[in-house]
Structure formats: structure tokens, C-alpha cells
Image (cartoon, rainbow, N blue to C red):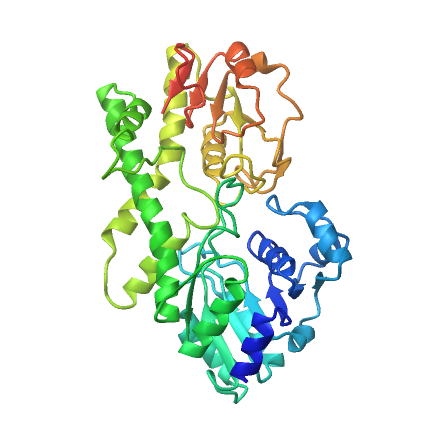
Length: 433
């Protein structure tokens, strides 16, 4: 089984099924297809299946041109029939892992994917989990489900974990030049999974699936904690009357022992706000309290309130109250130049503004509509930035590149800048966090 599958993978003749065609699954499917593998993207959303098969991309990092060429060549297709998982040699699970309201891990998507694999699992298949999760998930949760078939891991089938490292809109590092971490249930599992990924990038093997799972959580917990540190330093500088952005720039001139992180209105996206909670939850099961992680979460969660307080103070100085004020939120995506609003701090800012009875509008060229935003309301982006002088203030939450900031500076009375887009601009109308 092992030698036959290894040969298929190394010759790029293996049929690869990628379960979940979101921001991780679709780019991975396309990259594997470009290496010559025959790839099927399995997806429950029929609209996405149709778009893929028509060569239309809905992911920023995948061009419709590239996707159409891969579909046309027969190297990639999409399918909603999970019975066809049996036709694959390699199965890669790339499903979401959100948090419940209680901040506990919601592994329902992983469980559903594992059960779908179990229903069609056959000898000689390799299964790789990429979804971010707590250490032990692959071995303690996925493996028992697959073993219900009576097949033996390491002999009849193979199982590994390799954390996704996708950073949407990153122009420097993408799926091709970002090394992959791989940890299997056994050495053969690790070797097979490593050979899949080494077809397009460097691979770093670790001793177990638990280690690989922990690597992902460390990476994003590192970012969460350091962002929290600089956010707290921002609050300190505000009290001391200092410019935190200037201080970070100056500290960044040190060629060793310092790595710049930047403040903001909060943290958002599919990883940083969620992953540390996976680790914190797991640690509680072994009676360990993760003080740094929880403290960082508290600090970052309070930043939207701080932003609104800066806005309120700026309006008060100008004899204007927040109630009934017309406020424009500039950027609702969680980071610049992406069309993804998951866990965006803009949502928290908007909710607070609605609670304070402000009139809230937003402009984001990447996110035309925002459902369940601000006390359950649905908001639509302004189509343009004309008539800016009708707003009492603008809050820059996301610093998209395709925005005319000079126009904003010229026509807006008050600007709360959470991203330092007006760096080097000396104006009483610009309030930096």
C-alpha cells in the first residue's frame, strides 16, 4: 500500500481530493493541479461548485484566468457528491474551525468531513487534516472515526496533519514559498504527506501530528500576544502624550532583538482572534491556566471601545455629540485589500456606535454588503466617496490601498486614524490611536 501510493504521489499521478474550497482549499487545489495532479475540490456549497467548474474564482488569491485554464485542461474540477471521495488517492481536509459563543472549539466541520471520509475510506488512501485545531485532534478525534472502518492506520491507510499557512493578499509570501509543517500518525504517514507538499514548496517534518497542530497555534498566539503588547503600549502613549507610531518606527531601527508589531482597532480574520482560544481551551483540560493568552485576548478585545472613545472625545471638543452623528467607517474587511470581514474589529466598532445611537455608514470597495452588522442590521457600502462633507467624522478601520485618502483629508471634519494612513500629516482634524 505504502510503496504504491508513494510512487503515485512522486510521479504526480495521484488523484487528490480537497475537502472545502474556501480561502485555504481553493488555492491549494489550484497549486496541486499546477503540479500535474488531478484534483477534485469537494464542496457542500453548490454555488461554489458551479463557479469553480465554470472557471470563476471567488477567492482573492486565485485568479479566474488561472482557474479557467486548469478547468479547461481537466486538471481541476469541483464536486458536491462526497461518495466520490472513494476515487481519490489523497484527501486533504480544509474546512472551517470557528469558535462557539462560549469560546470553545467548534469541530463540527472536521467531524462531518471525517465521517464523509469514513463512509468511502479504502485501502491505500492518505488523509491530511489542514484545519486549525487543538493539539491531539488528528489522533484523538479523526483517527478513531476512520478506524471504525476496520482499516489500520500506517498499514491500510495513512493520516497526517499539516497546518495551513495562508495569508490572504500577501504579495511576498504565498502557498509556493511558505514552507509546510507536516506531522503524521506514523513515519510512513509523515513521509507520504511530505511528498505531496514537497511537489510545490519546502517541507519541515515534525515528530507527530500533535506537534504540527501546536506549531500553528504557537504561530498565531505569538502574533496575538505581541499585538496585544503594542496595543497596550498605545494606551500608555496616549496617557503620556506620545506618538506610538513614531516610537515603533524608531525601535525598528534596531537590527536585532526587536520585531515591529503595530496597533489597531482590534484583531480580526480567520486565525489570530480564534487560534489562541483553541490552545487555551485545550490547556484547561489539563488544569493549566494560560495567563498570557487570556490577557492578550482581553487587551485586544477592548480596542474597539478605545477607538470609539477617541472618536467621542474628538467630537466633544468640537461641540458635537455622538448621538445622531453621521459616522463613516472606512474599511470593514479584517485586513487591507481583502474581501473578508470575518471577525473584523469594524463589526465591534459599528455595534458600539449603534448602541450609542450614532448614524453609521461604511465604505469598502471589497465588501459591498455586510449582513448582521451592528445590532443585527444589514449594511451596504457606499458606492463612492462623494459628499464626504455630510459626515461628522470618518474612522479609518481598514487601510485599503485603493482609497483616495487625500480626498478624505480635504473634505472630512474629523478623522480617527487607527492604521496610521495619515502618517506625517500634521492636522488637528487627524486623531491617531
